[in-house]
Length: 186
Image (cartoon, rainbow, N blue to C red; front, side, top):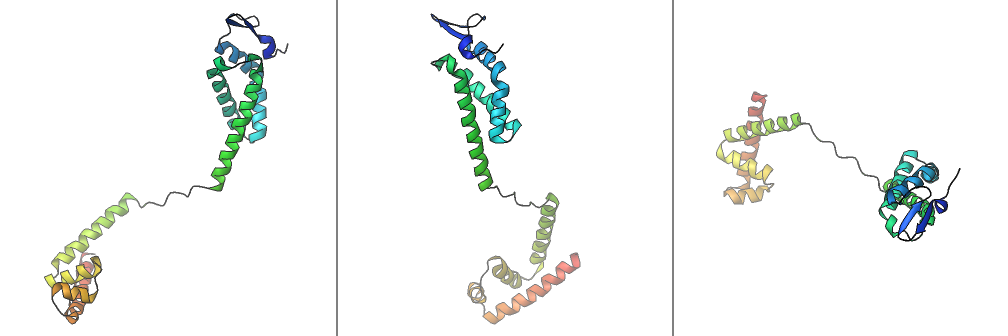
């Protein structure tokens, strides 16, 4: 026997009765609506969304919302219409969200080096710093100002108070000595 919400819900004074039930609380009313209309609402949402799992979520959310707003429902006879509209609106919202996500896909996270590569890089930096410390002071200063501070030969010459020719000489000799020191440790 198929019953509609209209035959189930009747207002009597300050109490609402559901057919043969006693006082119709939101729990009883929504439970009866759920039993009678859940499958049909899921089919409706699945047809709109093309995804049965998501359709079940949409319908569940609509029932939860109805339960929370049962006291504000003016006409309990129209509860199924309210539910149907809620399911359609929530399905539309999911479709809009899906379209936005498809339009603006997230880029995959950048590849991250392994912890081992960080450890190796740290070891190599320590090796280069140790080799730099082993160089004579002027060669070390010239290489640091050139490759770490990115100064030109003229700027290095001015900073150290030496000629540009001396800067070239110290840089050449410093790189050769650094290369030899690093080849010995490798």
